[in-house]
Image (tube, rainbow, N blue to C red; front, side):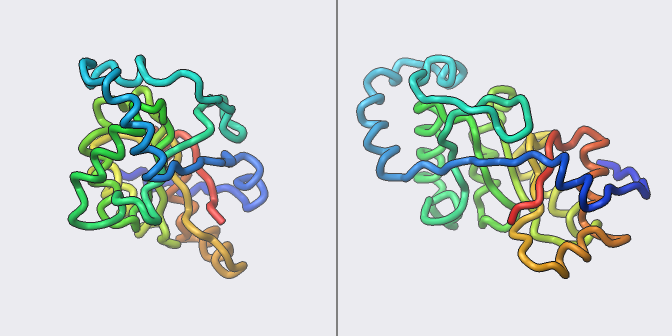
Length: 205
């Protein structure tokens, strides 16, 4: 993967004004597993290639931020108490992802720092790539560090693009200064978008 060594990067105001605002939800493990018991008899004969097309269709959808993407109001997050972020829990994690797909979930959120989450998602989602909205994050504040994490995220997720890439938990004014500095991570976001590796970008606070 080549990096375009461009020198252009946006102002704070322009970036914040044009970035996508994301309100992805997270589904609880117990609720998902209970619903999966109800659906198991209905979906047992389906092949994995048509799980999404035959999933529950009653879940409300909303347009995501300033994008034109319509996604279900619930999404699956890769952190917290789910097995997705826990080493040695691959079986449970893959079952959770399959269950989410059966329920009609199409928004999947992860991050480079969420343990094995990206690796687990990369074992299931590539088959559904054109039908899911895939988001990840970097906590790096420098351009080169952010690029390295993006490249690793794409490899783990087994995809050539992210729908959304976010600068993770930006909390302090000095972080904004560093992000928008000459070697700040904002440059990686803009370069990746220009190269088609990400579709939308956001500062995650």
